Amino acid sequence: MIKRLIKGQMSEGLRSSLRNLLREIEIARKHQKGARRARKFSGRQHLQLHIGCGQVIKIRRVNIDISPQADVTLDVREPLPFRENSCSIVYSEHFLEHIDYPEQTFAFLKECYRVLEPGGLFSVGVPDTDLPIAAYLGLTDDSIFRLAKERWHPAWCQTEMEHLNYHFRQGQQHRFAYDFKTLAKALASAGFQEIRRRDFSPALDSEDRKIGTLYVDATKPKET
Image (cartoon, rainbow, N blue to C red; front, side, top):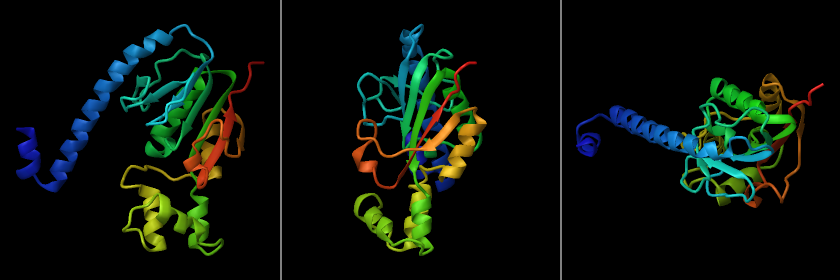
């Protein structure tokens, strides 16, 4: 019944809205299931969270995503079901740009700050928006656009502006674009200190994201 309505008796706007609603209902269902599963970590210390894991499952980490491959299926726009000061590291790679800025982003970062133990590490990788903008303005060569065409972007991306738009939107999956200054500001607003760029780490990060990613570490200050 619903599929027939979506397919033939609604405008495209209504179909899109209904698809989004059904998706959010499914996400809520998975989140409730994941929150129940997260209870097994209650009372544990020094947890290592891998948020937005997708298909990349890391051993000895609590892999979190909506996808069924995850250890715990959670909607991280909601509060994290982990105790305060219970995690030694919170890591995410190419996830933060998928939630709305500033409200959802700031709420998420504050939750990460809450669950981290004093001295704990927040480590994040996001698409580095400095690179395509600099190339578009002619401040660097166009190698980032050529690489995007070869590896990441769909065939319809031909002009620099098409590539730039796809970087920002990623088929409407990306919600915000980051440079270091903006990401550092968001992290500082959540209370993090020692905010710094870092190099790609083969032990931590995905090789196929080595180029074009801004990696940043930040620390929850130790109690004094």
